[in-house]
Length: 254
Image (tube, rainbow, N blue to C red; front, side, top):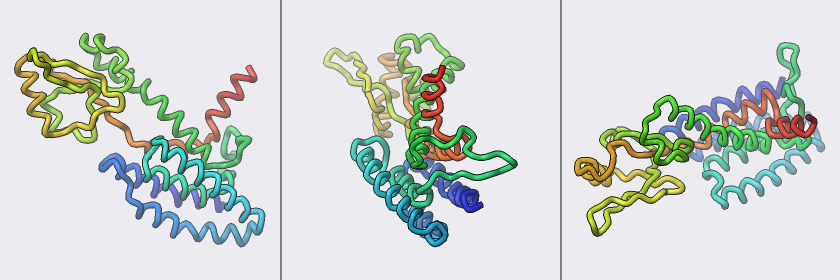
């Protein structure tokens, strides 16, 4: 019962984190402070009921996850808000949540060999993030235009939109850098991580379109916030378990 209560308690914070990450591309530290402060009730209760074994699991989970997440954060794998959210999860869920609901035991795929719940959340989040390019590709197929064939690989990481509509777009990155050379022609260079769209450049790009130097549609990348993947990873970890371990285990078994 306590595991279900913790899951229900956690979801509003994760969903709010998704909302602010989508809107502002950041999650305030206050979200995780409030989550940890109010969630400490569960931690204190389980320390008293679980005794020393639970306390050891809490310390072990916190240390391992904190060090791992900090290293990944320094390597630029995700933002500070994502890292802090994962750290708080490691405190609230030092043990993998197992519960009975509607005569079924969750997670449905069973417990992974490494019972660190936060790692499973992160693994699932990364797997879901990897699937995003496929979704982007199918989106481009549904909105296919011959110009896409010039850069087919872009179909996995972005989509085409009109230059004149960019003022209404937020949190987009340009997949190409446009530069005017000495001959008056525009050269394009691929921007690996997506250049942040600078509103001051919009008139410049519009001028290129009017002069026929570039097409009216250009490639942009939405840069989806990782908090969405973390929340999806949390839900799939609770319901199903470790998706990567399950897939690899069945692949080896077959």
